[in-house]
Amino acid sequence: MFTKKDEPKPESKDLTKAPGAPTSSVPAPSLSNKPKPSPSIISSDLTIKGNINTTGDVQVEGTVEGDIRAHMLTIGEGATIKGEVMADDVVVHGRVVGRLRGLKVRLTATARVEGDIVHKTIAIESGAHFEGSVQRQDDPLSSTSSKPAA
Image 1 (cartoon, rainbow, N blue to C red):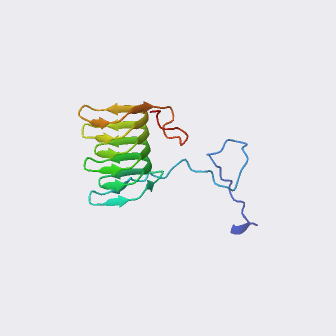
Image 2 (cartoon, rainbow, N blue to C red):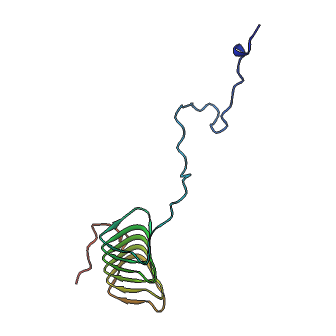
Image 3 (tube, one colour):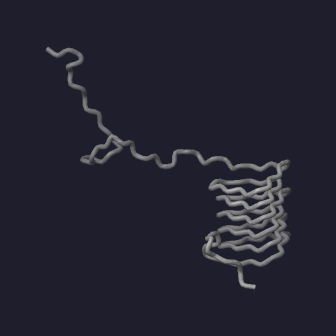
C-alpha cells in the first residue's frame, strides 16, 4: 500500500523546450524584458561644467559647458551646449557651440549651431541657423576619424 509521500508524482512537461532537447538547470536568458529607462534630464535651471558620458538618452534643457556623449541626445529650445556633442541620434532645438557628431543629426527650425557637423544622415529644417562645415561619414562616431582638412 502506498502512502501519500510514496505515490509517484505526475511528470510535468516543459512546453518551452523542443522534444528531446537537453535539460538544463540554468534559466534561459530573458530577451530584454526590462523597460527602456527614461532619459536623464538636465533642467533649465541647471548649469553643468564638465563632461557627460552615458550609454543612455539625455535631454538637455539647461546649460552644459563640456563634451556630451550619449545614445540619444535632445537639446531643448532654451538649452546651450559649449563643447563637442557625440551621439547616435541628435535632435537640436537649442544652441550648440562646438563640433557635433552623430549617425542621425536633426536641426529643427529653432536650432542655432556654431561648429562643424560630422554625420551619417542629416536633416536641417527651414529657419535653423548653422555656421560651420558639414561632412558626411559612414562612421562619424569613430574616434579614428579626423577633422576635415583645411
